[in-house]
Length: 366
Image (cartoon, rainbow, N blue to C red):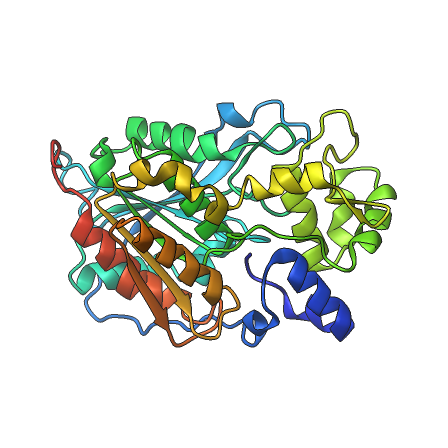
């Protein structure tokens, strides 16, 4: 779902690691390597300007978890932005994974260096936006929930509207791209299906959480931990994948009548709860894609990629196969690497060129 700190993993018994990985729907092989390879600096690259701003999310107001409605956002402006004041630009919206925020995501994909490298290698100039969607449970799942707030609408409406009103963008769907990695890949998948009126091209990197899931073997231990919590922040002491379970519950099975956590777990006293599991299944893209076939056909381009050593490879392949089964145009690449090892290289040498090819650089382009 995102980047997992190695020191936390090493503290866990091997059996518990496997169980928690299963809860999150991730294969243990995903964590064979957690280092991100840094592409070499490309000679002659011109500097990109970085704006660190806050965007108010009307869609996040009043969330029960107490997550901030004013969110940090990083905006990367291309080298010519400050020189040609009449020029407007396409925009890429890039979504981070679980357990990290926009700032940490920027380090994983090594921006602005990789953006600058892509431009000097021939990618057309674009604005790149990294919104922060980290919550008290370490991740919003880019879903709509009274517990965390409606992060789906925050991305698709609040962030896009702010960027269009404050920067010189080409404010049309054909000039907007959406990309995400891991939990962000899930978010890109989910949001793309539901908002083809907003985005024109989408790139899905190692998406998590695509399949319907069953409770993990250690659900009883998680129940016990949650019962002792006095506030959402108490989950910070739990292992990585226990927190991932809680983030999923906050996003997909909210319960406004169950303070202080305001969610239902998929088990009670160790017994699976069919009504909660049904809610989780309703948020699995491989289960609900069939409802959005017409929307997906609206996209100018869809790309998917995943590492050959990534535990999410199988489900990413299933997503590709399902798109193919409906004759929805898409490309799919399995590259050498783990869940995170090549993400910076992919961003510079694959994601940026993809959007350079498929985003419109003038108004009225179809």
